[in-house]
Image (cartoon, rainbow, N blue to C red; front, side, top):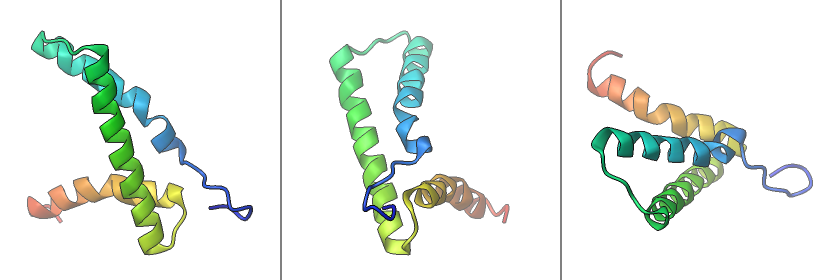
Length: 88
């Protein structure tokens, strides 16, 4: 929240919907299978809600703003994968 008590949604989260739908299109084209508009909307809604919750919870847990929390969440999976593979 900013000094006025307004929750600021980071740009990386705000633009994630378009990126996610582009990914859905890519998957469908590669598989030759097509989802209905309702199925795409359902998948997108789940992804966006889950992403928001994860970022918000990270923000609250670590007492950081939503933007930094989004970066923390975004780097977590590649960092864990690198650690798991023994690269770091």
